[in-house]
Length: 276
Image (tube, rainbow, N blue to C red; front, side):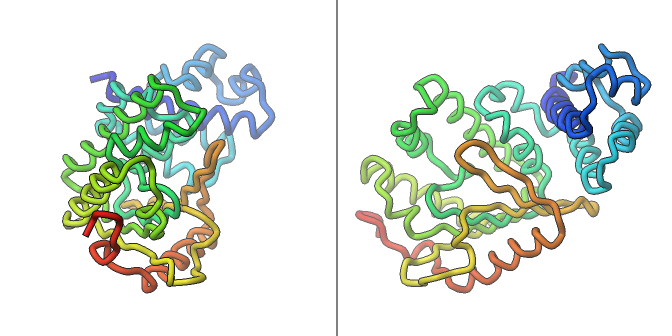
């Protein structure tokens, strides 16, 4: 099933390209350092070349990557069978978010704080369409591609034999902001309530009257993994995202989440419009 590996290979290739560029090496120069042909390296970077674990380790050592980065790439290569759905819906995943999707698929726990939007794993199609309607980055075609990819992500999670434990904190504003119509928000809140009944999902709401809190710097996601793979903080912005892997930084966001959680209320206690 060769197609199953395309998505992880693409992420690996883009990562190795960034490592090469960070070294200031041209393709020809890096190929000489790695002991491969120029064409072989270009195939690695565009995701069209298979890589064994020993290849990944060798490239990481030549590029001088950290042990944490090396282990992350090895874990990605070993998880190729989880990405079959991406080959059909990958056009709806922005390039900057592809690495995050690969992490999400193998995470064992996720701590999510969001102040403005319902997070993608729990969005209804109508909610996402309404959100895109006032965003100039999306047209009807791209919006539908993203919706299809989001729904595929949700199905992949629902079918997983070992889904991650997901703890979510939404600001009350996420529920009270009128995205489009009361009916759309009513359906979206019901979708959250249904998700909250799953054994591996816990959704809490940070009320307005909680006042100042530790997570006011903005949304973030802390991802934990098995087999000693280092935890990662994912922070998305208007024009891209960043990944924080430093232990002190990860610990800071984890502490922010743990100190924000006691200020929350159960999802069922927050009223929105016609939602009781």
